[in-house]
Image 1 (tube, rainbow, N blue to C red):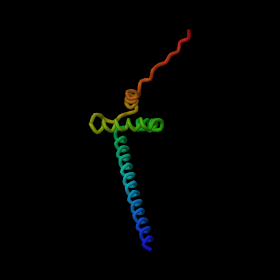
Image 2: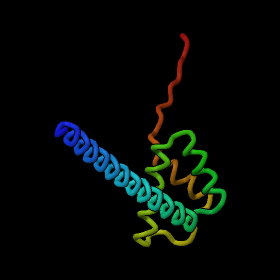
Image 3: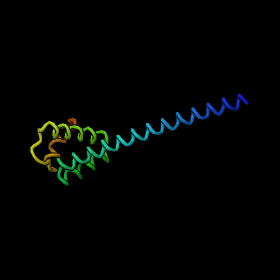
Length: 110
């Protein structure tokens, strides 16, 4: 019966490890959600409604670029370099500066 006790002890340890890893994952997920909520609140404070709509459209098309843009906007707001809210036209100008320049290709026939 010593084998049964050992098996039961191993099961207990495995169960405890599993519970600890789940608790750690839940805490990490909660931390991510809090960070996302804080980002949304800051974006709500620095962008007008039209600009937020444009940002959400960009997020659908290019999620990585939208995250990068949000990060830059939040950094500008936290350093105090933004004066007032950013409207849609200002966001467009900012996007044009951030987007890589596309080469114009023209084909001429001889």
